[in-house]
Length: 227
Image 1: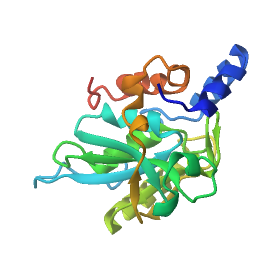
Image 2: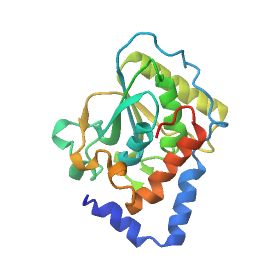
Image 3: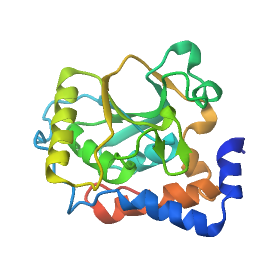
């Protein structure tokens, strides 16, 4: 069993009323398909074959990974670290908040089945709260920041345009805090962090903060959801 004592102790020390407040707070600023506009740059599905990748960060990578594992057209999702160097790409070091890394996920997808812009809409609507600064729910620190690590100029252009559209539409009650940065490197996390929710669906932190995201994905994006 995974030995992340920090998240487990955080959960154990919180009373049920406080947990209820945290859950409401976590969901309050998350958008819905009715309030979050479709990206202006969204285009038709690609006709050429070949896999593409997207790197997104939005709090604890367990939940973000699980969300995109349930999106049609996504062929693989890996939890890891982005934003820092190779020598500090470990959970123990990243948890200090001093490495420059963010817990992130590498999403491999088929552009013939889903577009980058559709992934962004799921990211902003379901995967996390983009208005939080250096935190998501009970997790605090720069390692939990909202960030998009772009792999090319087109992704950077699309991400900037979508955030501008979200801001203009006032889809969220607070300013969007998501940072857009060119990807330097992505470092896969330790084995125990991969597919964590699928392997530990009854873990208290997962039940409280991550499983509700999967339910919202199923409800708000039935055309994209896969079991």
